Image (tube, rainbow, N blue to C red):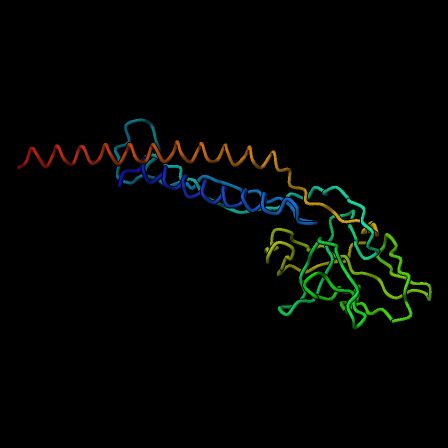
Length: 250
């Protein structure tokens, strides 16, 4: 296969991945706390060997630039806050994350919709308990009926303070991995956020802008179609050359 075709195919693979990321952003435009993902592309440089050095190029021949999908990152911009009637709906005004305890271990999230479980723990929609600053589930006594949450995460009731919600940030945000549409796992150590700026009775909306994502999807689709046509044309050209050589030698 010629270099032009392999280079074009590397671009097709990258464009296909970009379409998947954009589609996932659109699918989560209504997910509280979801952050839009973006791809990082780079050139993968390869030298063609054994070419005569007739044009001043360094030994090793021409440099071929393939498209490489290097990484995916999340946009950190805050989503808008929407007021709700739930005192356990919480929105973080900083770049930190709540921590919930799942069957697979602690996970990070910015989806701040919580509720009071029958056993008194504060849990998310999947029943995962919300953790405090000591990494323990927050427990509310039956007599604590009126709850308030301070900007620093301290939960209180009419009977006094209950505990402080833990809001953390990973030391290396690039090591976070998506699990589902609301949870994140990380191998990076986390540290407490000093000023989480929690707003009670509000949810952070996704920072995805659907119109922008649709434009990105249409642009990616056009590029994919153009590159596909190029690959098809190259394939037709090669097949035509093979047919002519075969006819000549028959």
